[in-house]
Image (cartoon, rainbow, N blue to C red; front, side, top):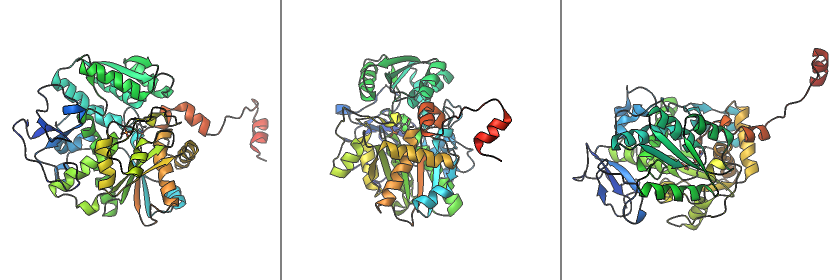
Length: 421
Ligand SMILES: Cc1ncc(COP(=O)(O)O)c(C=O)c1O
């Protein structure tokens, strides 16, 4: 099977351009990468970008910082850049102590230009759109994709159209899409309904689709995994045992797995060194967890989804056929967490100075739960991915945090109020 961790480097087919092509993950059918606009293979199967020459760590040395440091693992040498990537891998000593693991690092993707990991996908995706010569970009979004697409589309001088579930997108994200000049369509439905519509528009040739169904988006997102491996090894002389990440459409899970598979192909990484990919979903929106628990090859669509973590309020994860083999192939797992555990984890991170939106905190909530159940061991080196910045969802932050206390306009009264002598 083509998505196995130890699958050999594929032979370049005739359709390859500079050693790059697209392949149907189910049938193996190959396609030229840039001759025509193509999002899926036969029967709507997912496509994957393939390379004749997978990268080694040496290829990245001396290539600067951020996503384009990893151009040896990407289809281009440069993209439409703001720039993105090179996000911090924070230590969180108090949280590490509470959770009880050997080491805990927080890869804070909220520190990207528009405040989420989506920028990594868009720097590549919008570059592909330029190459294909398309004029109008579009996405369905729980918010962050729309903010990133609007900013990168603006940077690339293109029109953007975003479809959002009405009333279910955090304020900071709508504000970003609006100011970066996207046309915002609010759909009376959930994210999955928005994606159905935008896929329809894309099939009719009206827009270029930049959801993570577009395989080029995931190429940029692979660099999260590459940065984690490089920095962790530089600090510790080994790779982390586990990477815990929030899951919505399962794009990051698929992308990180692909990054690891390509390093295994080139011989840069031993299969035994690959971190266990561990996905976390909100209990009210957990089709991936259900599929892992039942051993299913794909997810079953949840039509009713609800969670405070609106960024991962997704009932039909389109990348599941790529992500499920990733979780299984690395020996990872998936777990669902309740909304109050997400808010508690958001506070835990904030107490370490790390401000994240609710969906991001799901990773830490999931780690705590798996540690309590003994699924994660005390000797493990763990990296949690936090996917979006606190300011993305100011309402959730306000609800989770201390409330402002009104005081009189008088120093004495203020002293008295804070209980000082
Ligand atoms: C903050 C945040 N976290 C997690 C996700 C889910 O990411 P993925 O679709 O890669 O699973 C999203 C995307 O919708 C997001 O905006």
